[in-house]
Length: 183
Image 1 (cartoon, rainbow, N blue to C red):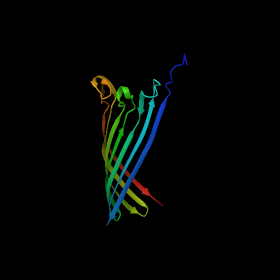
Image 2 (cartoon, rainbow, N blue to C red):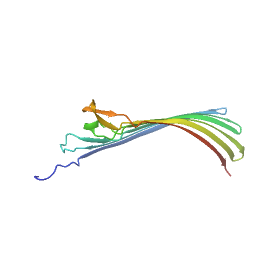
Image 3 (spheres, rainbow, N blue to C red):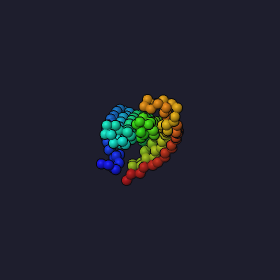
Image 4 (tube, one colour):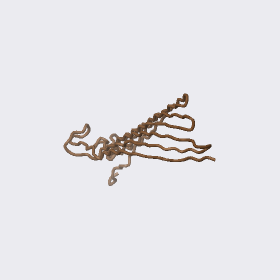
C-alpha cells in the first residue's frame, strides 16, 4: 500500500546444540589413572532481511560456540597417604556476532585456551578425618577480533580488514589446604 514502510522484521532463527563426553578410570595395586573428554557445540543464527526483499538476508547475528575439555590424572594410595596429579586443557572458540555483508560475521569472535596443572596430597589421620593440600598453576590465553578497519581486503568486502587486538594472557597459581571430618 502507498505510504507504508517496508517491513524489517523478517527474522530467521536456527538453534542447535550438540554435546557429548566420555571418561575412563583404571586402577591397579594402589595406582589409578583416569581421564575424560567432552565437547559441545552450540549454533545460534538470526538473519534479518533489512530490505524486505525476501531473497537476501542483509544482516546475520551469530553466536556459534565450540567448547572442548579434556583432563588426565594419576593417583597413588598407600595406606593413609594419598598423592596425585592432573592436567586440564580447555579450548573455547566463539564465532562472531557481526554483520555478514560488512564484516563477514567476524566481529567479537573469541578464541580462548586454558591449561591447568595440579599436584596434591592427603593424609588420613583417623577414622573419618583427613588432611589434604594441593598446588595448581596454569595459564589462560584469549584473543578477540575487535573491529573492522579500512584499507585491507576481506573475502566478502573489498577495503575492509580486521584487527585482532584485545588479547589477554594470564598466568595463575593456587594453593589449597584443607581438612575433612566426617562423623
